[in-house]
Length: 256
Image (cartoon, rainbow, N blue to C red; front, side, top):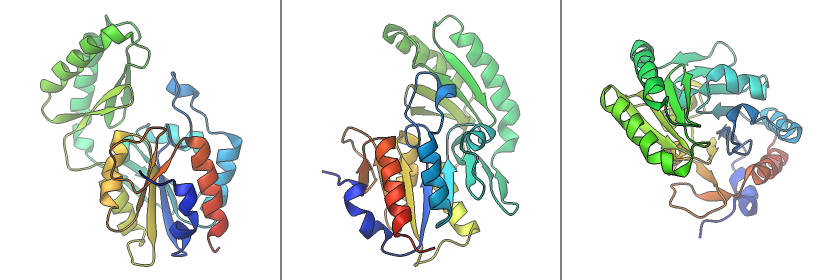
């Protein structure tokens, strides 16, 4: 049974220095039927502000960079959109990975729109470095047809790979880059890769497992889920409300 992070806040904060990496949807906000409605609560924003005053904080989201930055709107945070392919932060920090794939993504986007045109509720979302096909509002008996359509378009573009998230299929560049790689790059770039800094990653989706695996030996992964499931994370939080509670407890224990 994976233990609750709320029962181990003191142990997690014991090193005195932490770097906190957070997913957005399902972690800082509940997952909703329409992603545009996933807004950060005032209390969660307050918890993040208190944490930013005491530790480095980065948001690694599948959302477009500008979208997730606008929704949080806190200075001093590093924002990484499109699963870490598009990174922006304070003091001129900037990195974009795989820009050479943008024309290929545009072609695949057009094909995906056509392939899903006849499936009610299907939604294609173009992000700068990926294409998401959402099926949260698709009838259950139409989901297999949607999966086949996405697989067909993906097979036409071997330079892209498919990842499966919560009610979404996504096509993105087939290179060795993911949230885990982006997190490790940030630790190196921000001079946080040392024995006296404990990185913490909190996320709820399959794409966050890359970050959990990257931290198995050197940090702490925390899965956000109401169900126990296979994971490389060390601890569990049930929902965004527990995440907020954990962040408040963590910030209170960190030395400014």
